[in-house]
Length: 354
Image 1 (tube, rainbow, N blue to C red):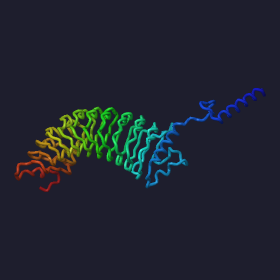
Image 2 (cartoon, rainbow, N blue to C red; image 1 turned 120 degrees about the vertical axis):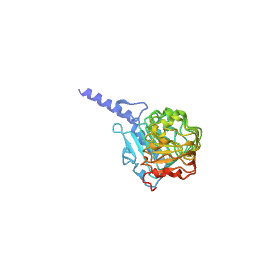
Image 3 (tube, rainbow, N blue to C red; image 1 turned 180 degrees about the horizontal axis):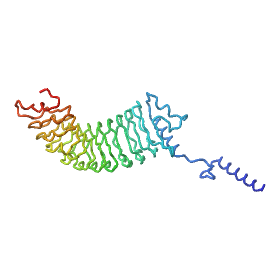
Image 4 (cartoon, rainbow, N blue to C red; image 1 turned 180 degrees about the vertical axis):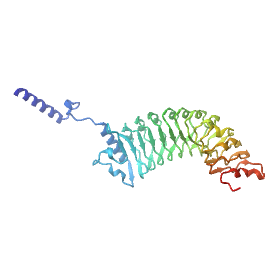
């Protein structure tokens, strides 16, 4: 019995000695040098992210230190099971800096939001390693460069908001592969080229916002497939051609805004019937001709109606049923016949003083 105990003690001493020297590949009884754990990878990635921040007026990053577990750092949320970072939300905190490529190491990240700061330079290509990412919000920063061509690797994305930046280049065709997308906004950037028809494959898309870029070309016919679309805005670009007739049949539309382009054609007679929920309708400053559809009289949810700056003619329909309407813009057209009755429609407005 004594001999057996003696051999056991010698065995333990050998293991401890070998562990002390950390021999490569040694992992006896788990006593060799430990491998880097996933949550330590996350901690290191966050520290690299912090190192790229050169301005922190509100000192929010001071909590990012070794005295506090990184899961409790400002803006960081971890999953309960593995203590891995699932959310990084640092919105409107007056942060200045660039985006660290190490962000790609946060492999459990689902939500990434830096809206309303002053992050600059390009979106790192390593972002495609975030295979669990669902929400990407970089709105109102100073991010430049092109939309990363490998963003398609983030195939779980449901929301992409990068409006109010300095993005250049074209809208990538691959975005049509992100089949879970519900919200897509690149408004207020400097994107050029045309709207890719592949966006018509985004069958779950509810919002498409491309306002104020330098886009040209036409509205793709394929967008008629976006039957869940409720918000469509391509204002202030250089888009030409006509609106595909089937676009006016998107019955879930609430916001339809195509003003400030070079769009031609006429408006369908059943406009308010096929878009029963529309409350903001704008075709301002285009080259739309023909008459204002009489059916607009039944658009009971309308708040704002913008027809100004086109080539519309004829009479303005009655507006008496539009009790939610508070703004209608009609100037710079060819409406009316030059007679006293041209403004009769004003008397049909709710709360009129005729």
